[in-house]
Image 1 (cartoon, rainbow, N blue to C red):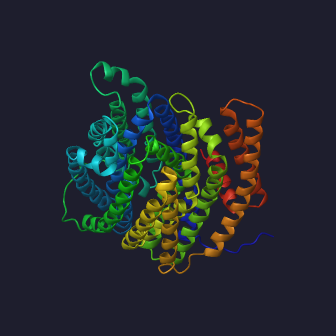
Image 2 (cartoon, one colour):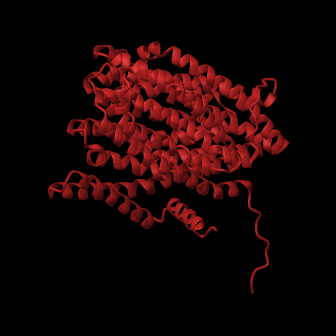
Image 3 (tube, rainbow, N blue to C red):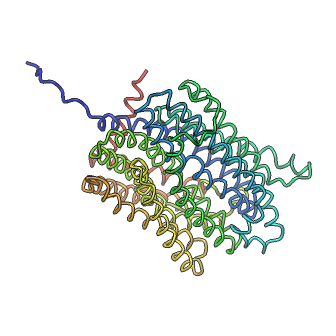
Length: 534
């Protein structure tokens, strides 16, 4: 006889955790498309432009890309999402729309001012970031020109990122997830189609990359309009700093600005250190960083974007125990991706780099140097991923000061390691410094968060990480063996990395299944659910 006992009501935290993997899956799918296009973009740039020219591009693109974190998808979104979620919960949708219109007005004003200042101050910015370029004939002047052209990118990206905050708050993840891929499409098209035409017109061919960035940013803004319109968030922006909710978001943003300021100093120093090293150092460092960002962007950053709205709702409901459970669940899923990614790049760095990049202007020396940087940065993937999962908890709790203090200590660790290592190890020393400082950041955030939550559920996280590590080590051994065997058979350079990478993924999934990993089950359950959905 069937039991008639009533089911225990599902808590808000349980509902959020059930939705979390699905939301992250949507964001991750969009990010996967964007990262694959980004990989194609990097392959195109590596093959079509010289190392000196790619060095200039990475320098010019660094500052507007960093400011995007401040005025857009990083700090600003982390300041806006909790306030928007609270306004929606306490005052309703109309109040949320009014707040967003005023917040967008303030954002557009700030973005316009920063864009103009960046274009005017391009020579001083390049001097600060890459004074070492003076040693190469014409490199400094060309980098200034490229920086000036590419700087308006921040206006478009900041606008798109604020729209993403609204869409994520309302559970509309599709447009926000897939729109970034348009940037890479524009980059590829511009890099292939424009250099010859620009040269004929008497312009520097490298400006094709700036044109690609500007069109890509504009396309992302346009792609969001239909989704924003459907939730009523396409109203005309307004500037009204008297709105108490706008002031609350700005007050949250102030300490985050200090934190991003510290991060910018970190970038300035890393680029400055690299500019004083041999030609190509900027590019090797940057391509390694791009490859490390690939697995993180597919799921780790997607999970971070999906987690913040859930945590903000639970904090608004004052359910701190559910916040702890949801954070720990997200951390377990994060490490399930980050630990194998660390093992993959540590073991198969060179075969993968050869498979992905070695063609055209990207020669064997470029492969070797990029692979060395990839090993150094790859060892820090799991610590960077863990730190990114810790930060949204502080933002949801309204604590924006602790991350700033941690960022300052992280900067000290980076400077000490970079100064010590760049002499004997060159660009690899700077990469090691990045990984070391991220480990410091993760440890400090973990300790301080333990003072804010009832429990960090460290035992659950540790057991999950141990299972994932065992599966990752098995996969690393299999991937290395297959790549080595493929290399010894004399196959063309493309295949050892491809075969080794496929073997790694297959063995990892099999090992995780044999260990009955709950994280693998959660991911597969999400995929099955989405396949059945109409």
